[in-house]
Image (cartoon, rainbow, N blue to C red):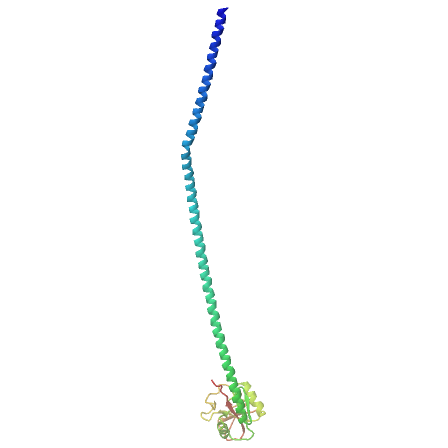
Amino acid sequence: MSDVFYDDVIRAESKGMKIERVEMMVDIYESADAVRGHDFRTETNTHQPLQRTESVCVRNRSSRAAAVCLVLLCVLLLTTVIVLCVMFTQERQQFISKIENLTNERVQLISKNENLTNERDQLKVEKNYLQRSLGKMDGWIYYQSSFYFNSSEKKNWTESRRYCTERGADLIIINNREENDFVKNISNSARVWIGLTDSAVEDTWKWVDGTNVTSGFWASAEPNGKDSDEDCALTNSPGWADYPCNDGFRWICEKIFFLFK
């Protein structure tokens, strides 16, 4: 029985030692774990500079991208400024051109106004002159810038012309149909001497100012006095006709009115 008890004690002690070994192993493992945990943290700390380096690289790349964007923005802004300057210059030139045109138009308007003022003043002078002239020229008629005198007595062509020239006029020169009708009206279609003759060259009719007659208002079959010394012309109801210059007829003087310049 003692042997059995002794065996039990030995087994108990063996179990106790095993338990103590297990506990020691646990302690060792825990210490190892602690050591491994400490080494892990230390290793983690050793990797932090590498992470910082990577972070710096990322920040550098971001800075370069920002710089590129800033440069592009500056280029875009500069281009915009240049385009605006060009547009402003063009509009400025157009504005200056418009101002120059308006200035030229203003100068032209001032010039026209001055011309109109001069014409107005000239018309006043002409009016005053006409009034004075009409007061001095009893029996004269004013028509289309000329004075006309319709005689009531009769003279031959030469004496009739002398009467006119002594008064600063001459026998009438008929330039158009309106003036021809005017002569008929003031003479009541009577036969009156006009300033037309071919006394210098037969059948070459000239006015008293030396101009040739290119066309006229001759009556039918007139002039017809080539062989009868009908070298002077008069007008009547049918039209112009040639007559001997020594015949006595009424006459019409014309005094052209010249505008003052």
